[in-house]
Length: 338
Image 1: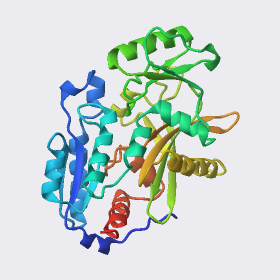
Image 2 (image 1 turned 120 degrees about the vertical axis):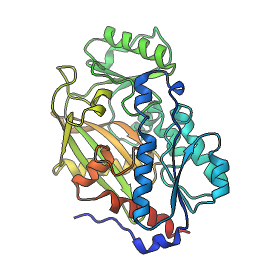
Image 3 (image 1 turned 90 degrees about the vertical axis):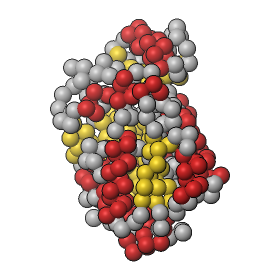
């Protein structure tokens, strides 16, 4: 049974903790679906605030907007729980938060600027995974409309935005059976979202969510295989944007040995190689014949909170770790440094 390192008594050293969250306005986002993917962040941050209050720590929530740094410098918190994953609707701008906090010498949870930059760029993430000998599906990076897809990728294919998370742009018809259909999808997404995409060989097989949590003593790995209720497109099992609004879209089951140890070893290597910190979530597709676990996505700033609908929370609970234990471990790690 895994138990995270944590010292509840040490939290008394924290005089003020600030939970930073994304400031959301509809005008920031190109589509309703990309806006919907972020709309719950304020409620989620309040849930984290409530959980920290239960630990007897003074806490407040501050939005990541143009007044963020001013507010932080006035309040002078001992620690920022950084949940900001977009600024003015731009995922890449979230790197501004750790950069500002580094300059201000204010401790904060989660990835530093380098890890954020890597984690918000699928092209860069996948190239680094390859450099560290971590399996990732063959892919092609495309910056403009009208580019032909390399037929050597094979089919089926899935098209993803290069700089966005939360399955934005991945609808129930995201997997394409022909190169021509995938090219139409590429042109549509670049035109709509005004950013590059990657075209990836779709791995038909189980989808596994992996969480790495560093409690300061060791990097623990938790995972769960998604058991889908149905195939979104009638042909393939995968997580689409629509599934986030369907609490019955899938359930998790534990991953058994020897696959569990194989994935855990790769996940720790990926965590280090991608410069993640404290915690991160990885998405994996398992090729059933070869039993190769292909890393398809990493998120160094995955949704964090007590809601059991959040993948990190649900997967850790599946493996016996409550959100309260996770929070105590995370906060005490920094309380010991103050």
